[in-house]
Image (cartoon, rainbow, N blue to C red; front, side, top):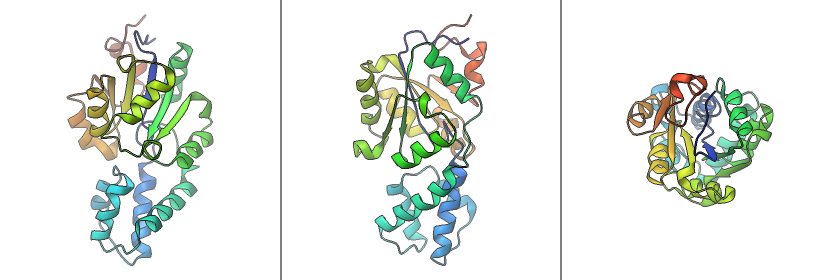
Length: 226
């Protein structure tokens, strides 16, 4: 079993890390463009899946979207919320987080999604109780290219950054957390695989699934196994 030596807090990204939700965002983009009489190839829309609303919006406008930003956000949230009840957790993540909590490690979600969406998908999967706090970039007013969301999680727990580990599927999140002095684990997701192959070179660890975190072979970086 993995022992998280010197780690007191684990901070998890949501989309693509805790849950398999990126298909929802691809479908939301497609439907919104369709309502505006616009079609775009899936490979182009797939690039936007990893973007924040602020990043997606100008790209969608280039394709011909005429919504103002607030209308765009409301439309995306409405579609996503209807689908988030059907999204499933990443394989083995529930088992892994229960082990962390059994070791007394605090757990948090840090996401660019809205609080409503985050709370809904965790509730629908019966794991709301596995996270002590949920923080969103809306809470900080700053994206994940700034470490504030991670620092706030640490402050909430009274844990110094060097005793926290961040799980992310995106290069930006990995770099930000690492520069903030935190341990980092890069998590594979098919939509962010280009980020994965870049981020795994700088992260403290990379995994293809959370089964890897339960493996003795992966235990040595963040702790030892027994």
